[in-house]
Structures are given as structure tokens and as C-alpha cells.
Length: 396
Image (tube, rainbow, N blue to C red):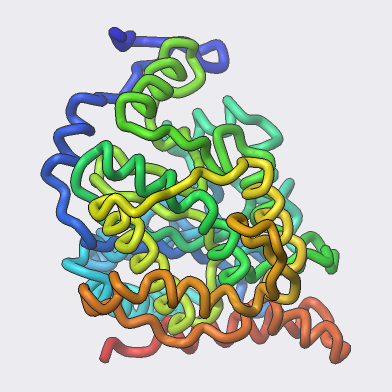
């Protein structure tokens, strides 16, 4: 299918920027189990802990004060948010090593500019209507195209890129990890508070972003690169997208990096827990790839049942029950970690992927404070202190 040079989106003519032949070549040259980390933070006033639009000022200052740090900072939808990227690590241990140094420099930088960071999925009381969008072509297109849906999305997450060689193989890894995504969400849930509400959810971020953005959440099973490519080409032809990153699935083949990008996790207030989650996600990708290579049988589960588990992760996190999609029996969500470790044991052993114990989620910790009578400000004060301390720790 020929790709148009220009298409119309939201009433404007724009250039399509997808070279799918080049993407296939990128995956052909990709290296298995290389890792890149992306961590999103809220930018806060140090006194009020309100979100503040300081992305532009902080990056401009970093241009002269710390150019090496500036190279690792990217923007997101709002100017009261900042993302730090590790760059490509040879493996998960190397990616963590790189990210620790970037985080330390970032914490030092924001301290110098009287700003604080917080890493949970949502801000407990911020009003999305007061947030400013950053002024880039990509995000102008997002806001123009999605309107309220984009404006409403003030959320923070952890993304893990894992190298997978071969475009077919990358798509098939995504297929096999579809039923695993709700389990990873339950482990990572960190956002029970939103807009002054105790939402009674464990991941309000997922409800705000994943349930409202188009082409988002748990994807369909595509089976092959040809099928996924046809899907992207159709979206281009009908004017839905102009770039692959407008497909916001919770897992996707990343066409520029040659990775499987796992996007399901809430941001984590504790850096060590973020690293443990990233290691477990890496192990899941590695195990799925190994299962494909070894022709391990896989029966694609019912999309509705995967969605049922996604809802259970959003609502109850590790406090609830999940559905075993093979037996259709329930089991305690507290057993998710043990189950994933058992499944990934061969890949972890073969490739030296160490996964520290995760324990209770950040959402569980916040809900425990609520039950003890803490208000939203006290809970968030604790989150900010944890973020600034653990992410600011010097690299080992």
C-alpha cells in the first residue's frame, strides 16, 4: 500500500512521517535484550507541592549548566512534567547504571532551581485545566487532534524498551505479553488519588490515560509484522495518524528503536522499585522471545478476559484477585510476582537478569496511610520526599 506524502488531520494538511521499510530494517539489526528506560516526573513547587510549568525553564538552564543531563531530558504533554531517559543499555543492569547517574544529576539540577519531583501515576489534587501544554509540533498535534482527552491526561509512567531482533518476532512478543500486561499493572499501581478524590482505585492513571486515549490499552493480537504494518498503513491512509507514536498501546513495537516498548506501568516513588519492575519487564520480554524461538505453544486468550484482568488491576491492584486465563479460576493478586518469576526463570537464568523482591505496591502504601487517617497532602509529601531521596542517590 503506497503511503501518502501528506494527509489531513484535524483539518490541517501534514506530512506523514512513517517509513515502514526502514522500520523493518531497524528490527532486522536490533540486538536482543538491550534496554532503555523512560521515567516521568511531576514538576512541583517546593512549598505548596502544586504542579508548576517549569519544563522549559529547567531545560533551558540545563543547556548551559549541564549539557550531558539536557541530552537525557525529554518533554511530555504538559510543561509541569519532565521525562528522563537512560539511553540504550547493553542489558538491564547497564541501563539501570546509566539511569542512576541521569537521575542524580536531574535531582541536583531541580534542587538548584527550587523545584521538586514526584513519581507516582497521578497528582493527588492538581486541576488538569490549569496545566499548560508544551509547544512542540507533536504535542500541538496531539492536543488539536484529541481535545479534552489530551488536556485531561496529566499522568506519569515508567516505560521499558527491550531490544528484539526481527519485526515479526517483535510483534509476536507483543502478542504473547497481552495477558501479562494487567499483571504488571497490578504490581506497579501507584495512583489511588486524583483531583482531591480517594478514587478507590489503585491506578487512576490507567483509567485517565489508557481508557480514554484512542489506540490505547491492551492491543489486538496481530500475529505478524505484515498484519501490524497493514494496520499502520490503514491508519495513515484514513488520516488517523501521521507517526507511529500516535499508536499508544500499552505495549508496542517501537519502529525507531527496534524494541518492544512496555508502557503499562505507573511511575514509582521509590527508585529501587522502579528498577525491580524494569528488570521484571525485561525478563518477561526475554521469556516471551525465548518461548517463540522454542515454539512453546501459545493460545491467545479472550480479549474480554484480558480486559477483565485489566479492570481488576486498575480497581484492586495487589489487594484483589486475578483470573488465571488458562483455567478461568481466580487467584490472589498477591501471587502475581511469584507467578511471573516462575515463568521467567529460564530467561533470567540464561541471561543473568536479576529481579529484586517487589513486595507491596505504592498504591497499597498510600492506601495504608489513608486508612491511618493521613490526608492527601501528607501522603504526597511522603511521595515527594521518597522520590527526591531515592532518585537522587549517587550511582553505585
